[in-house]
Amino acid sequence: MSDPKLTARQQRVAIQLVERSALNDFPNPDRVGCPGTDFLRTLAFDRQSIHIGDTRINHLGECSPCFQEFVEFRRKAKSQMITRRLAVGSIAATILAGVGVAWHPKWKGPDDFPQDREELVELDLSSESTNRGAEASHSTAPTVKELPRKRLVLRVTLPFGSPSGDYEVKVLHADGRPIGIATSGHAKIEDGKTLLEVKTDMRSLVPDRYQIGIRRVPFDWLPVLVQVK
Image 1 (cartoon, rainbow, N blue to C red):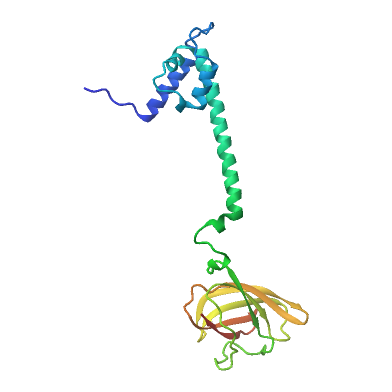
Image 2 (cartoon, helix red, strand yellow; image 1 turned 120 degrees about the vertical axis):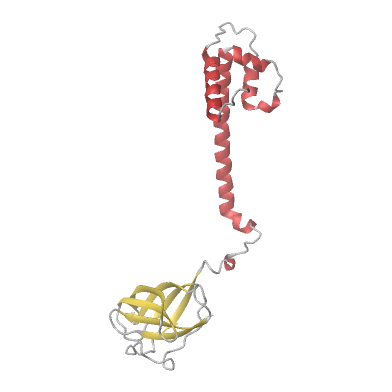
């Protein structure tokens, strides 16, 4: 019957036991047959430069002072490797932050991210009446410029005389049916104009005609007919 194989954990435990033994169980106060500090340093820092069959490696398992010296060199080698990796990572991150976008073959500039950018759209409703409610017909609703299917910042100049305060904004079908896109904002009066700025997301819509409903809570809605492209 063949011997059972050691598990990974058992192998680690066995290696730890061997290392503990090599560290303490083989005193050599006179350092007889020791390969020297240069060899131990090279073994720790540049293992590949020493052939696996070098008989001086066997000495470490028979001399606790040499093994202790090697372990200390190995600890320093690992510490330097971690420091170098962190330094290289920091430099790489700095370079990528500065010019990484330019290096990417598919990244040419801000216009390559149309779905992620917020686009500013200004709606001037200053000449509209504040008394029209949501029941207004399509023929009387003002037609404003086309709106892109993007994340938008709507900067609305409300009808003349509109008070400041909290306003609701909804996107509706052209016939007034709700879609589920709604937002709100606080309007301020600046230089005699009532200005409202809100953010909304039109990316889920299909190209068609819609209404944007605007009202000061809890008053009537002002419907604005728009074309989403």
